[in-house]
Length: 262
Ligand SMILES: [Zn+2]
Image (cartoon, rainbow, N blue to C red):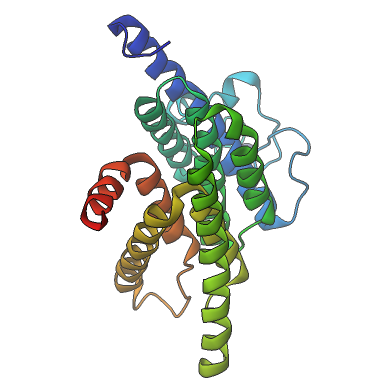
């Protein structure tokens, strides 16, 4: 079944995807905050960080509750960070794009899980320069679990495996050499593992484009963030944004480049 078969189904699917994405975005944002604080991943009920007021069902509705309460806690009136609203909206948007690009397929579900992992590690890396191993593990398991359903040929599977190993292993060697030369840590271990997973999902050409794009985005962020204190900008978010862009819209670019080669 395709969402493009008729218009009411398309509209319904987009609305459902947006709602599901907002709920998932809310969950991932809370999970990121808990990981950064070192709290158990899923523990207790959601509460106001200022007064401890346990949120009722209506206060848990993503996006709407923040807007209705105008970004304030219902009990104590303390400001709730717009981060909650932004996280929910961004992941709702990403979910809709994923559905529109991959339709109702196993590939859509697999790539949505990958986008969730990228989103979570972007938040934790921005907050505390942490890339949880759980993100790589979940992405890897989703890739493996979806293999029988996504119609990849044996050659393609091997190419993607090699891309993962080569990108992760290659960058590990480069970063070890750079560490020796520069006398400090250059690329984090989390970044290297992330790039291995990106290679697995995007294949050799897609992953190389993602790497170049990640460097461009990283340099842009670096240029924009200069002067605001000496905190180095983590590389993980740049890799995540580049990988998501290539996952969703990279196919024409990869096809064009293949055409140049063969
Ligand atoms: Zn409160």
